[in-house]
Image (cartoon, rainbow, N blue to C red; front, side, top):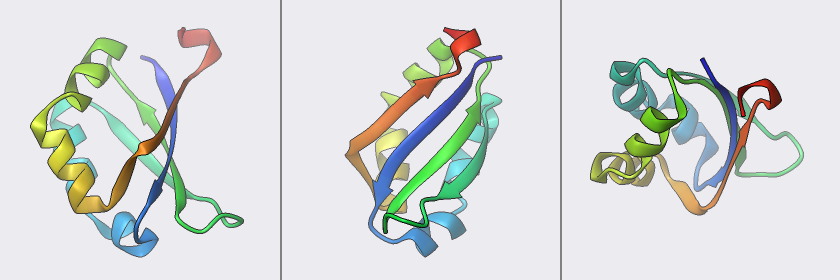
Length: 89
């Protein structure tokens, strides 16, 4: 099961943290997420994802539902960086 570190910026950190959209979107796909906030850079957040496989994750992010969830959560898509754990490449 690959582990990913995903970093990005959001419009409102408190809204992003409180939003149920992550679990609603990723949960049914068997993807779990832990959230992190950068204390030095306002609006930068991160997630550690455990994904069944990279194809599932990548395919999910290409859907209109993913775009809607990101918009709802205030994610700035142009700032997304995805890192794959070295042992899962």
